[in-house]
Image 1 (tube, one colour):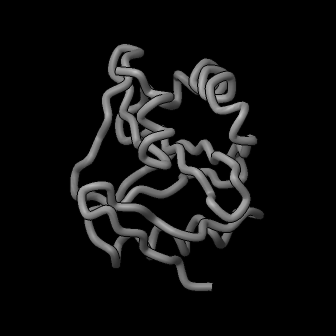
Image 2 (cartoon, one colour):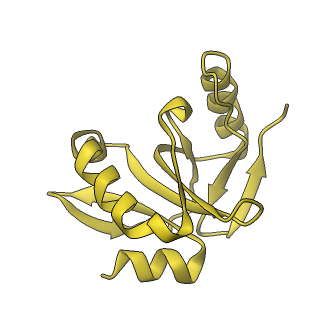
Length: 125
């Protein structure tokens, strides 16, 4: 799987790592950052080296059950965001998790994404 080409073609990706191997997930869950203060933001030109660095620096967390790599392109800034994400089964539970995380984070989670529905859920302000 050429992860970089998939990210570029789709504007982002959600990956699960099993034994160090990335597998794209597209199931009907709502994915969002578990530690938004640790988000890495890079210019479009740095996508590939940033991806390699992020995975190398976070492989233990990414190998943990229930943790995923989320990468998405912010079209307003033309920058990629790298996050360790978790998932929720419903919109309501995603919003509850996000509210809890936002209550203790400096950087606020703005949204959750469901790849199966190709739908973004905005977090309340």
